[in-house]
Amino acid sequence: MNSRKSILAVLALVLIAGAIAVWIFRAPPRETPPPYKVNGTWEYCVGIYTGTCPWILTPGASNPVLSCADVTDVPGLFTADPFMIQKDGTWYLFTEVFNGLTHQGDIGVATSPDGFKWKYQQIVLDEPFHLSYPCVFEWQNQYYMVPESYEANAIRLYKADPFPTHWTFVTNIVAGQFVDSTPFHYKDMWYIFAGRLQNSILHLFYSPKLEGPWVEHPKSPVVNGNLHHARAGGHVIEADGRVFRYTQDCGEEYGTGLRVFEITKLTTTEYEEHEMPTSPVLWASGHGWNADGMHQCDVHPRPGGGWFACVDGCNHSAPPDHWTHVAFANGISLEGYSLRPAGPVKPGQSVVASFYWS
Image 1 (cartoon, rainbow, N blue to C red):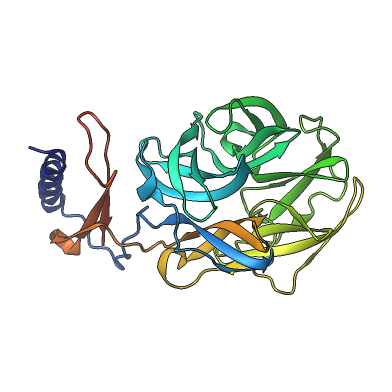
Image 2: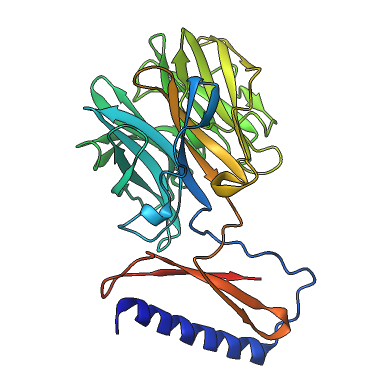
């Protein structure tokens, strides 16, 4: 019996057992049965946008360019929070890969010769705690990463050794549960934006050296009590002598769109910013891979002119790969299932099965 038939046989046993359990225990009917929702193939995935300036962007590829269906070394449930960097003529894209076995985020990498067609490579950073938002950057010919690591109660700095497949922990930059921390170098000083879990507060720290010591800015928090402007959504960039930061709009729900602000004053004692007139720069499209939201935008100068960005989008109502429409007692129905990996598996390899119920 081949591997797929074996999986289907197991699924059949699960369905039979589930039907018996439902019939025996007779779960009370739900007042308002919700639509099915799981981490499906398109829940979060990565696309490429382009533009003539970094605050006006439109789809620039056959999106999505990277999804969990491309992940080969772990059963990935989604890919999100992309960051790009170029080295020796090759583009590298680092992204959160949500691991279906551990149910936490790992950091994976994909490569591209042109920034538009991507090939997934492997997981490059896996910790005992959740990782996401792999903010990668180059400094003095070395490559560093500050991933989100709030479960470790610290903002952690990693260094590539060697790039891009191995990352060594360097130090804790700041203690505390911060999310989507975004470091950048500006006028001989390092700064880092760091959000809080409630998505309405944005702190700012500074240091003369990347490794620290870091000091909280006297104007911090620079955003306080605003769900539309606080949580970071990509690198801080410089363009034509101006500085811009991208932020998630979490006003209605988490990660519905991206706003862009110009930082007009930044010293170790002062901070001012203004939202760009063209903001928001990204938003939920209402259909397809980014139907329900977009919350990440990493912008880079495009070879030959203009700008391009790796972005992410989500569709919470993605359909299953395989439909079943099996009705159980009390109106419960199994609508379908998806398998990760979707293709042939080897003996002993783990498979994640996602079931869609209504």
